[in-house]
Picture 1 (cartoon, rainbow, N blue to C red):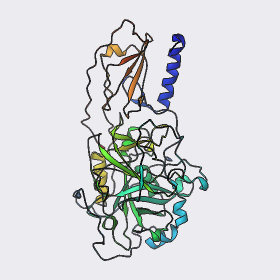
Picture 2 (picture 1 turned 90 degrees about the vertical axis):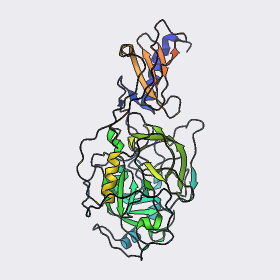
Picture 3 (picture 1 turned 120 degrees about the vertical axis):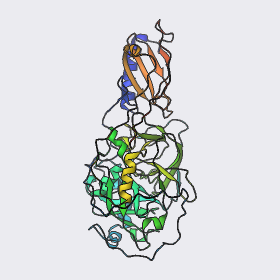
Picture 4 (picture 1 turned 60 degrees about the vertical axis):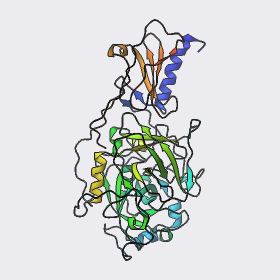
Length: 462
């Protein structure tokens, strides 16, 4: 700051770097602008055709919030064959050896990895802010597990994601991310493994495995997009029974819970792949408080260790650490497949569940074909700027980003008279009146006072 003649160009370069990294550029209207192409959080694949399924049934009731895990199935064991024309349970148990599952590549991984790098870090690992929580490795819960499938989008290698059983009257529905669902949809060999145990084959997993028979995905979703349709990054898998019974009878379930709020106290669970921090491929969990991802119907959280493999993992409110039960209000996914542009392991996103997600859930719970949807209506929220329109006509450069590492977007403005101000965000698309960064004593013009406000979104539709 000792050289005022060089400071403004340097600031402009710094702002651009911030926007191309973890921040999001804003025009004067506050609309996010795509930044550089990062190492993708997942490999884009085209949305598949919804699968024709069974006869519609009425909407299902919500499950109690603390549904115990049954020790025994509620009906005699069954020995199923495939209902979808795919491999049978016995064929899947033979196909999914311990070695094949242990060497699966997470859907979040970029293509072109060799088998020896089957558990990579996603992107370049940045340095998290001081105080960022760290996850706990633990033995997992029966209703949370992993999907394995032969991953043609990644050159034929087997791939995996995280999933969680959700309560329905049909007792056979598992929640995951939309970009995981698209990979499952086009696969031949595809199973859900509750409470996955590394080193065991499919036939020897403690609760067995469940072959995937149908997928339910919103046809408007495009994998790993940064556009508003990233709000639709969820999917449901219908799975066949194994010798123990239907999946929900074997594992218990979470309660699928639509919400319009963006602040939640949740525990996020997933199965990260990184050998460096999770050599045994155990589940991790992290209790956090969420905040809104501005401009999207999504929430975000900060916790280290969320590498590839966690996509689709549940964000659980009212979580019971002993039983694993609770209300699932989101799943890892959304913008860029669930992470920021720099793919930092400690920044994770999730769509929240509104009317679009509820409609998809109802289709899955009814074993009903996912029909055509109207064009997606994105969030109408825009950042609320302090002062009048006339004031903002004097801006030269405007950029936003999480400059303070608080989980909220702030805004820096370079004015036409070379003044620079910082406006702090409150996480609810509202900024304060600002403070001067340069020069230390601001020149003559006085900014108008802020009138903090939020812009409600009456059309919430995810």
